[in-house]
Image (cartoon, rainbow, N blue to C red; front, top):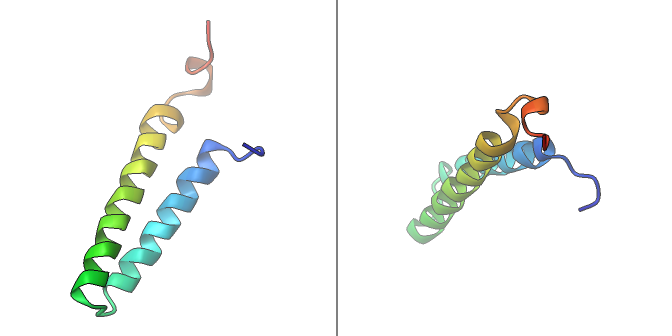
Length: 65
């Protein structure tokens, strides 16, 4: 990857999920709304995984001993 940090990826996923939430609340079709909600949950899950496995650990704990 070209130097993108875990924090940047986490922030981008969270931002996109927020945008999908807004779109879904604007009264899109049932199918479109379901697709947006599903994508939103997926992105939030991916962001949570990044946080849990990378960002929640102090930097010195995540380095090999």
